[in-house]
Image 1 (spheres, rainbow, N blue to C red):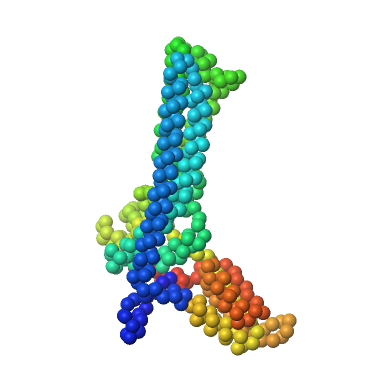
Image 2 (tube, helix red, strand yellow; image 1 turned 180 degrees about the horizontal axis):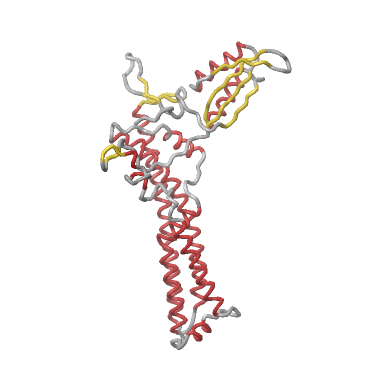
Length: 357
């Protein structure tokens, strides 16, 4: 978490951002964040254009297949069926690209809600974990949405209508060519593909489109996409759905982002067993000075040697482990270090014990 401090009066009294011993003036930090924001917006726009390109492929191939099927004066249902398979491939490619688009949109959303919004509305303060969420995503990129959500969303937005047009074109092509079908039996006979009977072809088409429609309905509730304008029901005064955040009708008790995805870096707890008391003091001083992390010394006894040791306990995040190793190794190469994950760390430098209103 970044902390604001003041320079000495002899220097230019300008707020700086202090983190792990490094200091940046507020103007330098703001400039860096603006450039990062522009870069992430550009990335999101690039992948958004790729999404549009995939949809265009599906629309163009569908139009070409329907044109071929209705221009030869005979049943050409195989062209429509093959195009349906091709459109399904386009749907998968577009869903994969959509996950990349959401990756960049996730970062943009974090900066919008907790950096730029804080500038525009002074009472609004950044959440305690926004910097960790952004740093963790930059160091260890992960897709913010699942493949199921991506497939369902792209299907409902675009491909559901393309599949509908292909299904109607398939039915009309069989009914109209080479002459209008006079009965249901004739329609089923024309639906035959090779050695596959018409009943099986019709049943396969119904099952295929039914499964797609059911999949689109079942994934409606997946709303982890940060780059979409979606209803976030927790912000409405409905029973059991966030009404406790209202102090007046229609007014939020605190100005907060109505949707901000959050992901903290993994939190760890390190135990460092060193030799003499002087060595443990040197290690503790280095952690305090270089890492700006608190250290607690616990008394311990080596059961093999019978000698007393100091056991240093330090809470840190996963990105600080390499620096901890370097600090300990520089002071005591023979030290014994144990790093284990913890569920949550509360207190100064981590999540606050008490959330501010």
